[in-house]
Length: 118
Picture (cartoon, rainbow, N blue to C red):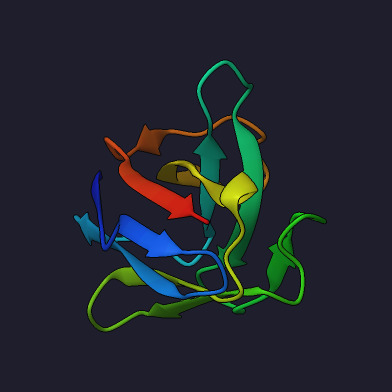
């Protein structure tokens, strides 16, 4: 499965962005799609995940209450609505796919850059 992120850009602190992740190839019911981010010099950080079948969602502590993950099964797409953005949200955002019983990811997109300025 190939994943491609889009929707990144530059936004002022307090603003919003909506990221998209388009998947080519079938996403199976037992898959989980996730958003991770990585800032320069930092480790990749979990942002949010959504189970493709059940829609169960999980969020990283730093984004809870500000970001919302969603999906469109018919279009094979996942989204990340980001509100109340902060400069510390600046990073490259990646979408990834794994099987629900695995901890490792089978596929990653190339990433999309999000820059939040004051």
